[in-house]
Length: 586
Image (cartoon, rainbow, N blue to C red; front, side, top):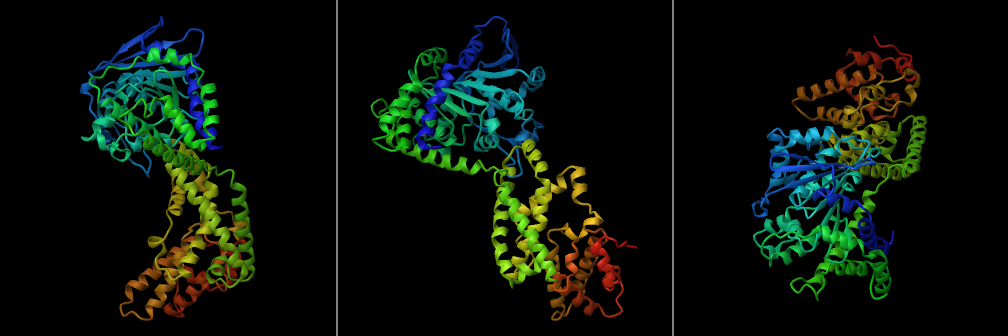
């Protein structure tokens, strides 16, 4: 998508919104202009429910009657909510981002009415279309109510649409990131904000004792969703939270010169904007202005003009600096979207090709009586150097995959992990030995605690957290296919390398008891894997590091050493039968 198309879309989206009946319908329920509206009264909050006759549309409008001067700008951490046994937004937390913060006033109103609002949620038919709306602080409660619905919606269900008018921001950057992790969630929010309305910027300007030096970094609050920003005559839309925050800060600097909190007439604004043919007007202007500068600069300049944020109309705002800031933010936003739109399915063929190449490599090195782990570690063949690119491509793919999943909401992330569990486990078991080989080839020590990649750790956790059937399937072995088996413990070769180092250590250390104990533990670990057919028969190849360890360990223990593993290892026929899947352990 070109920059011109991207930034023109703000006007096109605004035109689509104003030409629809959604804003009218929402505002009419807020102002009780329809017959048949049912009003419910709670603690400091009331809500109106309107079911449109002859359609499947339900509109819920929240109202809060509170002196704006009593609003608190303070934020409450989700940790505090958890301590107070309020767990209804826990689904927003992930391991990577375990907490977020929300506005104290808004969350207090919501929590004080939660039982009634929970009853309201139970009355909502998931098959019907739902608009949740509110004006001012009522919009903040509407946003919280919509967030409480997010955990139960999926891509195949009707998603609620939250339309707020002049609502203050309700949370910090962590909350914004939690909601933005799912495009389905973020698209549920449309915030209508008038340039003249001070309430949407209230928490931003009050957060700092010096509004003149307020920046996005010092704000504390962060917007989410789509913002429909409007002046008296025109409007535009922004989706980038950083650009929206810059604009709200600029608007806040205008409001600091005004006293009081006289709210804008959003009903009148909606009526006026509906009469404007915005898309046609501004698309022509963009084409004309693009000749004078870049499409990016031109579209941003026009959007600021639409909001009356120009040097001529706003003497106390450096609009040139504002335009430059937004341009930078939008460039970052474009890049972030491209990175975020990582589609694992699109690169799946490349991944399959790389895995098939490793399967071939595994077979060829087996024929060389060395195994793919030791071949990659020694780097004595041209094949070994060819594998480097497959190793890197697969690692980059799965690192990105795991990072994406970690950023997803809990429910969506769990479904994603289940879907990719088999592929992720096979990748880990095939590729992590290559990472181990590279580490010890370069002189590394204690791979598991010092160098193991987090994405391998998380992939292993996926398996442990998976369904019982999936875990059972991936943790069981068919004796008919032992030859193709990948060792279950992807860190097996790291343990082998540490055991080899322990054998070398015994030649120089005086106190041998602790080192010998480590070797005995490793021996028991190996036998457990072998007995359960959980280790590849490749480890028994003549040139493997495991056989090197066994020979050194056997020399340390002596000719007459007897154990379950030594009884198995001393008979080559048993190992051959193991490779064929026909050996029965006593």
